[in-house]
Length: 551
Ligand code: VG1
Ligand code: CO
Image (tube, rainbow, N blue to C red; front, side, top):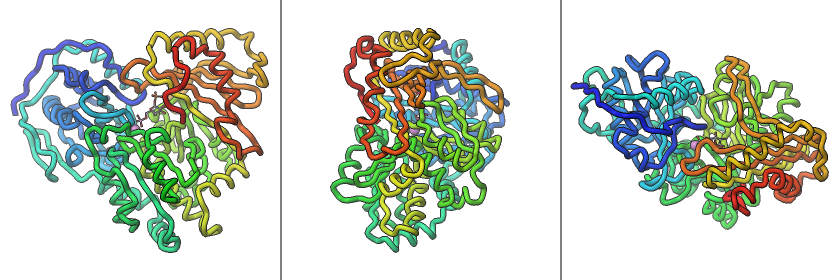
């Protein structure tokens, strides 16, 4: 095939955020924009792109197909030897992570803007994962960014549009393109981790137990159908919105109580025992039941507490636990009880990977509906759903009609409860958001605030979270402003690194109660919210009286 060097000039702002480069589709559609970023990504591969094997796919959103054709042409131009692509480009983020590891590939290119809406007027994204299956560390994303600021040309091969609907292998000069069914390997992995016979017999015994999984028209539809319906024998009505759509049916593919409201409504109306949802690219999850909501910070804690319900952990044991800084300390309590180490890392999954590669972490999670384990190097929504079904099946051995609320209450009784909530102020104007952060920075820099009484709380620590990776020693600064009170209650502020327009301020609040676990979360934390809003002057600086989303 003929390879051309195409002249180009740099675009501003091609800096990968928490999870790759996310922008409006219209931005990616500018001539050379996507090519520049893909070239920079290929050039930043530590051993170079020549001879590399890359796994490629995405969540099915608008612009996916065009982006993959560009990746094929640029990969051939850069002497990549093999691309493994999901049929029609469809590949969940966890499934890519798995296949990178299984095929011992050089890495992967994931085409997703995760939980952000899709379609011509919405978002697209590109993210690079490394040979361990996890998101590229800052050293690599910084290199990508540096290259984008200086790029003057990219290399592209003349390859006509490749049909991605057909399984099989094709060659274009030195490049091999293999199109696979991206669900197959993932199903095999899940069967190694969970006890499918145990789950099947649980569903048989408790035949009235109703499950409903909402894929929100994201990528997990085909995965959910295969696992829940074909493998576990649940009725076809146990899945909804399972056809991946380019615009997610006009919805916001984010599994929380606000955006997955159809599921929430049906769970209540139809007395569904177990409801679940996942995001556009399949790495997030939400678990609910009738009258029950599993807070993501609690979810990871319970999965760790019930490790014995999952054969994978029974075999390997719990090597350690980890959570992101804003995530509540519920997991810390489980770690303490089990006598295993706990790590606190910055927001974003890439920080868990090093710990897992070093054999120091088995289960980890983030408050943002992300739960996972060292079976791969991404968070994994469908895995979390199977983990929770395993917990229910396990708990039902001693309590045949156990509900999600029973399981949660039993946990709170034993460990106490970390009340936790996040307030998001989305798409506020950047100037206002920066003023909030500057004002808070002044507060934490004033050391006389330590020991200060604010209503019923006493400030014990106020700083901007900094993380030193215990494995490679790299330091990540400015990871969020925390104000921690003497009783362990916390207020955390940070700016989102995944938004594509304006700024998003996230406020996280946590309060522990050893006994009084039956309160409503918002009631339990309302005094802390008030303190947080006063301290930050958020309403004054942003003009927002209410958050866009509360989780
Ligand atoms: C958000 C979440 C973070 C998560 C990230 C990627 O980042 O807070 O916990 O890891 O999204 O999730 P930010 O910087 O906007 O707060 V996903 O499902 O987009 O890969
Ligand atoms: Co996601």
